[in-house]
Length: 264
Image (tube, rainbow, N blue to C red):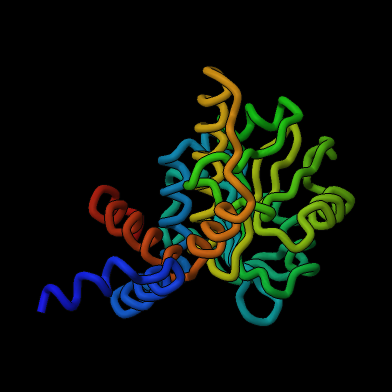
């Protein structure tokens, strides 16, 4: 029996192996049944634990029904957010559910939702390594397998448009993002979008990690880029919903164990 199965196992094509692994994951991992308020609170806590929220700057939004959007309130920041504090705002940024006020920066999120019908969630933060990279004039490098999700999928706004609180900044950022999932904002920070909150959060966490590894690598030598073919293949594999859900769910299980007040 082993003599028959072993050759088949070792002779499988790369496409077959990738598809089989994906199908196995689909059977065991999917989107969680946590409420959207709890997911936003968990996403903000995860971002805070990874250095994305050292101040009150930054916003997480999720598109709801009737041109409304769930978001974190300004008060308390990411690190103190609980599901009961999450608010829902309309397209004029007026609170229609919950207490508190949204971060004024949510205004430029609305420009992106207006331009991209495929976007269901947005994360914008100013983490340290991304912020440092944004000061250099360099773009995010795709030179490690863990950053391949950004291959041909990370835009770059090469100038600082000012504090993104007005419509002009929202227009600039949404146009620079185009059809991509992420953007490095010069002298500013990062923004990621996704069909789901899981996707946008996963990309934001990976963006900061990619910036950190890039800065570390550049401190010891010249970066060696990944080949286009290999980068595209890895990009397509890691940007599957099952990867977002599996990773996000694992983060949240740990957070619920270590910070149970997030569910208050």
